Image 1 (cartoon, rainbow, N blue to C red):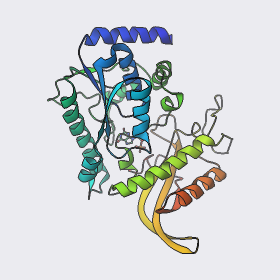
Image 2 (tube, rainbow, N blue to C red; image 1 turned 45 degrees about the vertical axis):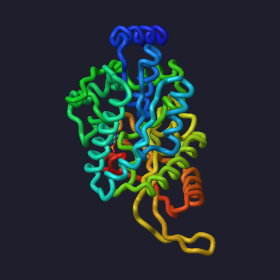
Image 3 (cartoon, helix red, strand yellow; image 1 turned 120 degrees about the vertical axis):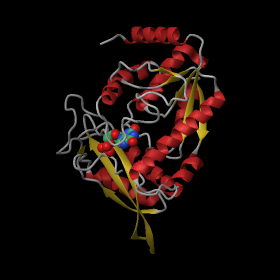
Length: 335
Ligand code: XMP
């Protein structure tokens, strides 16, 4: 166990020695690891760091604004936001196979990142938020493309990118990364967020990805997350929570929670009219390591409120279902 201020000054010193006066580029995803890496490197070398935030159009509601506010506005980090929604939607049009979708998103991500970062700075270093479990995982055998977490991960860089890797979190576990993030001034809620997959909503929209679907899903997902955060935790039978360290609300009591868009229409009634709209599924799981997971026994009142709000507030959705599958045999994501 290390002392935080000492740890930060040592890490800062190490980064300064490593990069000298060189420019560094970092792909900011909004996730915990890349965010903490950005905050730490910025502490060390300030404006020698440029962050590139690629918006692939598959982010959660207001995610782009949140990232820009947190880094550019509050921390004074140089961040460039690239709006690549059209490029991603264009390449995803007509594609329904989950693995194919993942490949396209990963490939386009590298393409946008390389193209834009080459224009921006003459960087000598590529910074990444690789943490210790990533190092271990990539030494073993990954599954389902997950070792290729976001773009160029632990496996090294594409040959043409002659950049050196800067990975200041390589020795840290997730809980240490979170503590470091808070100590560096990142908001607590941001640092303790649920994980979000690199392909984003691309794997939460079943089959073909369309902007219309992503917009509906974003709204439903935001309502679900807001209600989880706002509902105080209470004991419900069948839960797997840490009894020593009781969660404050249902967001904290779950390891991952999100909505999934089903491109299926069903009939409903609203007022005196008939509707024929899409379905969303809610997924909430409790897990230690994400390799196995239990579905969360959320209170029925919470589920009822989320369902009512989604159907009343999101035009285009008229049915909400709850996923009660464990992993295995189901996976956490639906694709
Ligand atoms: P599954 O669905 O395999 O998910 O049970 C386990 C954990 O991994 C995350 N996940 C991904 N993360 N790129 C990522 O960065 C991916 O392609 C990917 N697929 C799944 C998932 O969100 C869950 O936390």
